[in-house]
Image 1 (cartoon, rainbow, N blue to C red):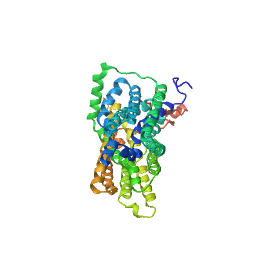
Image 2: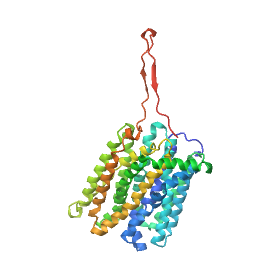
Image 3: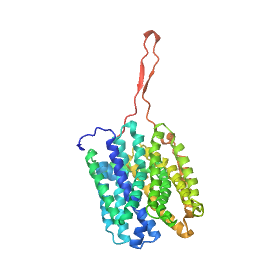
Image 4: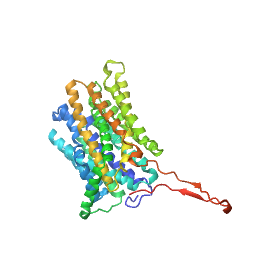
Length: 435
C-alpha cells in the first residue's frame, strides 16, 4: 500500500488524526495505574502524585493559544507532527528520570507535545472529513481521550504486572513514533502562511478571544475535565486502597474510561439527527452530579459486593458525561467569529480544558488530605457539574448561530402556471464543507 498516494477511503485522513490524538492521550493515561509503582520507586507523596497527574496538562493550560498561532503560521499538519515528536521525546526522557522533579519536567514536555496535537486535530478533521461525516468524525475525536484512557489504563495494568513503569514509558514512546510516521505519510502537506501574515493571524486570534462564545464553551469543558479526569486518574489508587490487587484496579478503571469513549462516539448520531446542544449538555452534567454522589458519599466498603456496586456507579458517571466533549468539540469548530480563527477557538477551549485537568487532581488531593478520605470527592464533582450546567444554558444553536445537522438532500416541487403542464422540482444539496 502506497501511503503517500491519495487514499481511496474518504475517512482515512481523519481516522489518522484520531489515532494521533489517542497516542497523545496515552501520555496522560500511562500514569494513573503506575502511581503506586512510581510512589514506591521515587518516594513520592500523594500531593506530588496529584501534581504529577496534572503537570502533563500544564503546557496545554498555558499554551493553547500560542499553539493556535503556530498552527496558523506553520500549518496544522506540521504542528501535529511536531507535537507527536515532542511527546515521544518527553516520554523517552521520563523513562530514565531519576527523581520526581525530573519526571515532572519530562511530563511537562509530553504535555506540550500533546496540546499541539489536540489543538490542530479538529481543524484537520474539519478540512478532510466530508460534510456528511463531520459529526461522526468529531464524535470519534472527542472519544480519543476515553479510548486513550482505556488503552493506557488496561495496557499499563498488564505491563506493570511483569515489568517496571519505565518500560511502560518506552512502549508509549514507540506507539507515538509509529503514529507520527503514519500521519506524515497519510496527511497531505499544507501551505504555511509564513511570517508575513503573522500580524493578520494575531488579529484573528485577538478577535476570537474577544468573543464570549469560545470562553463559555471552554469553561463548560473545564467543568467536565476538572472532575472526570481527576476521578478516573485517581481511581486505580482508590481501588488499591480498598483492597483490590493485581491488574484489577487498572482494568476496572480502563473500563470506566472506555465507557466515556463509547458514549462520545454514540453522541455523533444524536448530533447528526439535530438533537439540541443543551438537551445533551444539561442532562449529562446533572447525571454526573447524581452518580458522583452515589460513588463517593456512600461507604461501599461496608456493604456486601460494595466494590462492584461502586464500580457500577462510577461507570455510569463516566458514561453520563460522555456527551459533553463530543458536543463541545462539535460546536467548537464553528464558534470562530467572522474575523476570527478556528484554531484559536480550539486552542482556547483546550487551554481551559487543560486548566481543569491541572487543577482537578490538586484540589482532590487537598480535599482527601483535609478530610481523611475519598468521601469528600463529591463536593468537587457536584460543584463543577452544577457550574457546567449553568454555562450550558447559554449554548443554544440559535444564540451561537450554528447548525449541527447537515441539510437534507432531496427535491421539492415548485409552483408554475398550470398552463405549462410541467412540474419542475428544486433540489437541495448538502452544505459545502468549509476548510
